[in-house]
Length: 194
Image 1 (cartoon, rainbow, N blue to C red):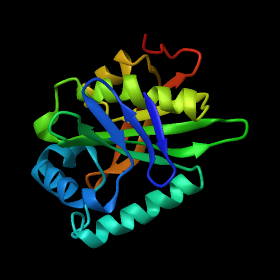
Image 2: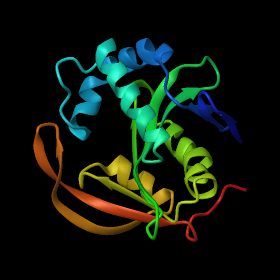
Image 3: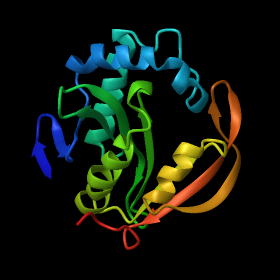
């Protein structure tokens, strides 16, 4: 179900989850979840700056995110469990390209305590992909993951993403340039939820 509040952005809901635009009131939950999941997340993400979890860094992140929303360049969501309202992770569409491309890059993270429960699969299949293709009118979604990240590779394959190539030293992850496997999904290939 897609709802929209002009001051807060869309609210996407699935049977277990609510996806919504991050706000200042989310800082403590975000900081605690990311801090508790640090060792779990570090192998898959860019290096964290020393102030990564501070309120000041979070405010900068929110300002950047607000500019991306305003300019139709990116859309970030926090994923909350509907029962108990616990923050479990986040998902984003970045590098939105309009014109002849109509595409974006998909990124996601899950707190360690909530991993391997099918939550990210549900968030993407029942909320984020419908939002990207049906609401934003995108033609193509792209995603990239480290070759040894079997969980992400299985997730993308389950969602219908097709492996498209291998990018050598594509992104700087955890302090070093890392190869990535690239995936793509077209709007006409996407299987919408029943």
